[in-house]
Image 1 (cartoon, rainbow, N blue to C red):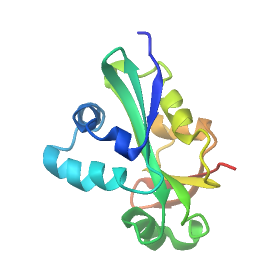
Image 2 (tube, rainbow, N blue to C red):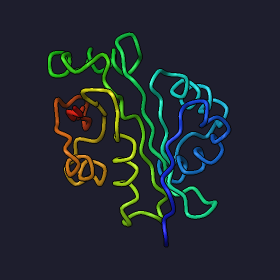
Image 3 (tube, helix red, strand yellow):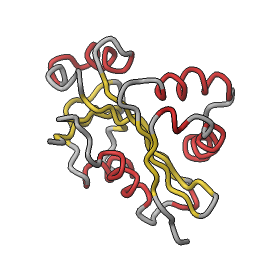
Image 4 (cartoon, rainbow, N blue to C red):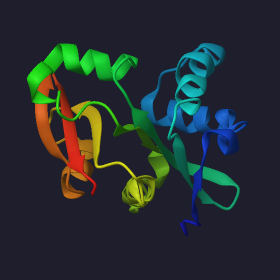
Length: 170
C-alpha cells in the first residue's frame, strides 16, 4: 500500500473531518459508541484548544491514520489529573507543554511506518519546549515501543498500567 501525503491541519481546518476521524478511532480503539458524545466531549473540546494540530495519513481518499495534540495548561482536565496522580514527577513539565493526545492507525495499515510518520509530523516545528503524553506502562505495547524509539522517556507511572511520558522538543 502506498501511503500518500501526511497533512497537518489547524482546529478550524479540521472541522468536518470528524466522521473520518471517528471511523479510524473506532477501528483502532473500539470505543465511542455515541458519535455525538464523542464529538462534543473529545473532538470539539480538543479541536478548540490553543495550539491544536491534527495530522492525517491517507491512501488516496481513504484515511489511514491520524494524530493530534494541543498546548497543555494547568486548569485543563488532563494536566490537572496527571498533576494530582503523580505530582512531583511531572509538575515541572506541566503548563505550556505540547500535549500529544491521540495517535491511531487503521489495523490493516499498521506495520508500514504510518504511526512513526504521523508522530514525527505532529511534533515537527512546534514552538513548545517539551511534550507530554499518557500511555500504557507495558513495555511490549506497540505504542510504548514507538514513543520510546522516538525519544520519549517515562516520567511517572500511575494506576494499574499507565504512564506519563515526556520528551524535550527544543
